[in-house]
Length: 185
Image (cartoon, helix red, strand yellow):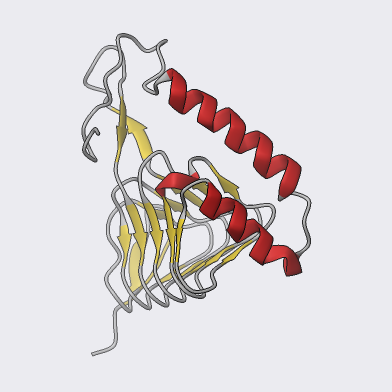
């Protein structure tokens, strides 16, 4: 297994970093989610959680995943009790994505765990985990970059671009996101 922040082995920019087995699993996952979950109403959340578990997502308690949420690789997703992945949220989980208990990822948020090593001519894929702390709130259309941790009870404003860790209890906003309200003592 390639460690986080390490380039994935690629012969060129035109060769997938994923094995054939992984690419087939991705196709099956996309087909199954579209066929069995993408159309379901909110009360069908237990069904969506079952499908996620079958594809390797680590779920504890009862998180909520909206039917229009997009999850790239569910086997890299961890959701704790009452964590919420909102309408149109995109967990681009090429690496681990963790939502701690009570964390809310609002509509159309993009959690991006993948980038490229721009120092190499063939631009190999590099992944780094994202963690959203317990009780944190990530506002609509925010973009969280690879390797970022949003601390417990932090607030990320709508449309913020988060390029570095957010301290627990702090409020950040803007592009790039800056602390606009520090954590309370």
